[in-house]
Amino acid sequence: MSSQTRKSPVSLNTLTRMKARGERFASLTAYDALFAEIVSSSGIDVILVGDSLGMVLQGHDSTLPVTLDDMVYHMNCVRRGNNGALIMADLPFMSYANEEQSLESAAALMRAGAHVVKLEGGAWLAESTRLLTERGIPVCAHMGLTPQSINRIGGYRVQGRDPNQANDMVAEALILQESGASIILLECVPVELGRTITERLDVPVIGIGAGPHTDGQIMVMHDMLGITPSTIRVPKFVKNFMAEAQDVRGAFEAYAEAVKSGAFPAPEHCFT
Ligand code: KIV
Image (cartoon, rainbow, N blue to C red; front, side):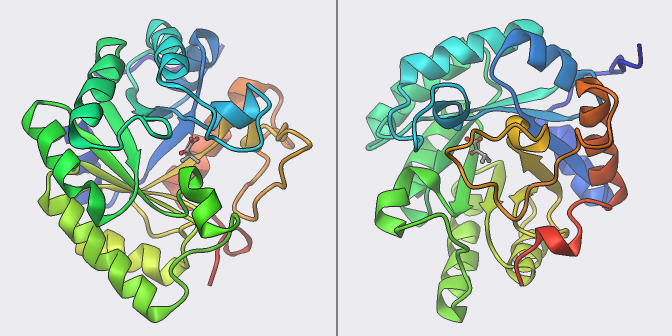
């Protein structure tokens, strides 16, 4: 068995030091104890308990039906299996519509074992981010394509292609960092925008479809295992690591290795 034992648990400081040294880190979603154990002992630094579970586990066509109770349940499962990875958990749709609600919802996820909570949005999250951070709850701000706003955006498409929209996104990322965000996650943006935001920020930036220059990469586990539900179109930024692996652990290890060596994402996984 090739499972790895960690020397020490991954923390936000670990990721900040990795960014300073120019070392890439790998992140993956997991939703239960067994996969959390395999992911976290395969060289993957960050587990996301993502509200993508609404689509890959629950069979919905968006993340909107996922509830805070669902997230707390899966967070508890992942915590039991985790072997030293940093765990982020999504605040689901409408669980952070105002500051007070953000605090209550985030507290529920932290009590269940999350180390960081993830919220989708831009500068409008500044006050909640400040409040959560001041109360001891680290925040990851998810920008670019934000699936909880899919009805406003109008489809799963690249964000920030228009120069004005790109400039706004850089400005909003800086506001969120200034408000205390510990991590920025960028989904589906052009390579150059991913690079600019990563270079302008001191905090680690995780990308999914945001090009090769972000400090870390993330994927939905089912996508990288080649088992995306048939109702969902496989995005361009996905690579199936199971295709050349002997088993699931081998796929996770190959993904971690490809992220750290810079081999993933390749140009065919990126938007220009
Ligand atoms: O919910 C999720 O899995 C996510 C990833 C797509 C980053 O937010």
